[in-house]
Length: 404
Image 1 (cartoon, rainbow, N blue to C red):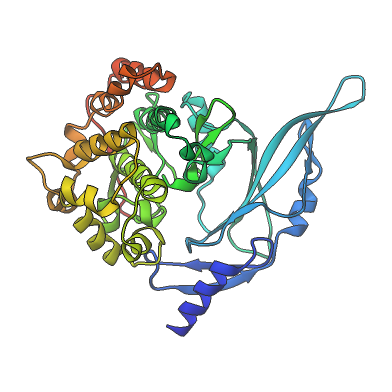
Image 2: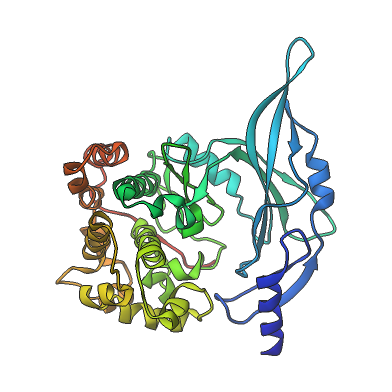
């Protein structure tokens, strides 16, 4: 127990530019096994300040501005601001776009770049444009180093200044319509397969630019499933993602995953943002729900109690000053996910297959956002509704997560 607490303190306070802890788990937050301390990737960053095919990449600052160090998932990430410089035919060097360099180490064979490329090839909307993706071999460390270069995607939805102005409520609704469009389009696929994100969290939903364009990032835990083999197996653990935003079925340990789990995570992100910016919930409850410190079993019990009914869902958040458009969106999402008279939350958790996949279609989810069009023209809501209308998928497919 003392070792676990020591590791937790390291992860909480360790600067992302210094060494970090890599671990293997049989679940989230339990059975922790300290594998090794890996030194900071300064030598790799220096190596990356060089040629990438037809362009050169220059690191703007040798300090990572962000990284993943709060959750133990056998993966570690650094993010750097960088610029691209192109060589012209005249032999001159011209500065190109400002980009984000993502450098990560992970123990699995999965590659975020492959999933990102697949999503781009399927024309999934609201994903940062990928400039480069590749591996760096380091014999002295097991696992693999992966490098991604992508366009800047903006700021996290959870801390965005847009929440400070009530007049922006419809813009936030429009952003969540855009996030929904991304997840639904990825899950609809292109005939050759489809993608589940599996790590929808407040940190992975961004807004970019003056027009507040929605962006969904961090596809590292995504799964590309074959359209011909919906029972595809995976080498990744069944319980993956960011614990406070995991769906009930994922927390319970069900192996079958669908886009409904991603949509439930999206609902939880909205609920967290409403609590954070407009609510006055009990402080202890807020900490237990959103800090990521509870075990999956305890978090599951807390979540079940909270989502037991619409009344308990609203009461726990204590939204005294929430814009009507946002509170109505949260209620409509709740009703779509948990308001069925035929299936209780226990039925949803305990069923081998998620019963919501049979009735929660693209059109049903998109309709949640339609009432906002009565107030103002929202481009992403209109695009979502058009996508749902054109979609030929009648219900959602599931992927079996049983490990090999």
